Image (cartoon, rainbow, N blue to C red; front, side, top):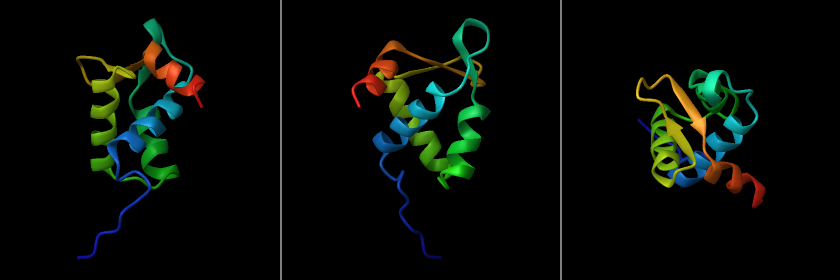
Length: 88
């Protein structure tokens, strides 16, 4: 089986796209964003893979760009993530 690299094979690149998607979503209670609202566009509109989503999410959390709720169903855009977008 052949595999092809996508635009999001780099965890950092995937994380940046996830932050960009999250910034465009209106948060709910306490600034929470339902994870499916960033997962679906990333996978379907941007044609990324599930493994790239997981790696990108882990990278964004590690860098303090996104906060993953303990339940795994919500993320929160952190100040560092907002600053990442402003630096563009």
